[in-house]
Amino acid sequence: MERKEGLAKYFWRVTYAHTIAYFIAGIFAVVFMDYDGLWALPYFSFMRPLDSPVIALGPVFQILRGFLYALVFLPLRKQLFGKKYGLAKLGLLLFGLTYLLTFGPGIGSFEGYIYTVIPVRYQMRGIPEMLLWLLLFVAILHVSAKYAHKKIVTVMSAVIMVLIVLMGISGFASMQQTVAAAF
Image 1 (cartoon, helix red, strand yellow):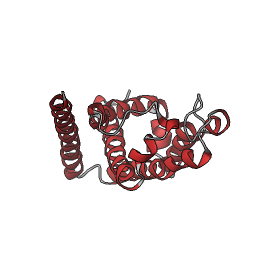
Image 2: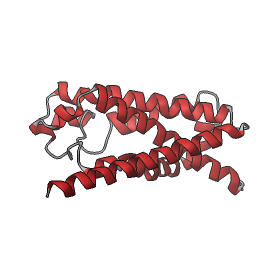
Image 3: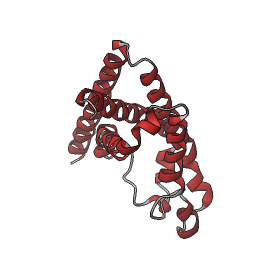
Image 4: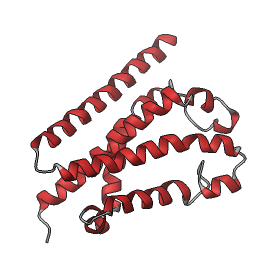
């Protein structure tokens, strides 16, 4: 049976790798991909506007999502995290399952291209963000595995996670004050 410490490290690594990668890719998308303009299109009326307070908490919620990724890949962790090219396989799996082959007609998915009324040019706009997240996620996992024996990796990951949480909470509080002042 695997030691609990090893399992805790696995969950921590996957969670912080996802959260940090998601945060960076999200900042990239907002700054360089004009999500404000994109989400204003009628096709995206189901999306919350970027100035919605809960959007600021998005990175904080990703901690749970990172934990869920770790939970889902738990049965495959030795093949994906302990073998040569295992992380490359993880990247391909994630690309296929989370982008191309979603269960429903998600934007940019195979079914999304077929079954939604959203033009392909708008669906494809998410590809750079998704690829950036995917590359960062796999790269962070690779670096954290390669330097697992270095305490600085754990310290830096914890510091970055705390900063992400603090930025999310302060952004949420700031937006709440703006909304309250408008009334």
